Image 1 (spheres, rainbow, N blue to C red):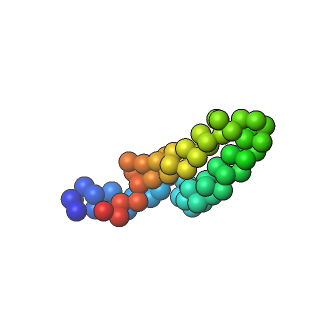
Image 2 (cartoon, one colour; image 1 turned 45 degrees about the vertical axis):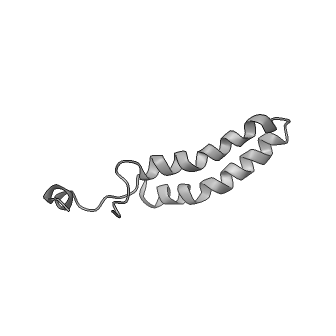
Length: 69
């Protein structure tokens, strides 16, 4: 660990507890949106909501993520 990393302190997820909660809930939201939109005869496009899962994690844990390395 470099001196700069120690001086800046531990890295936290964006949004703190709210951010981690959003990451945890994103799979359930994606499934719900998949079925809600799919039932409107949009099955061909409703799969796109599953991209919400990694996008949410990238936003919350992105470059300034947890730092467990």
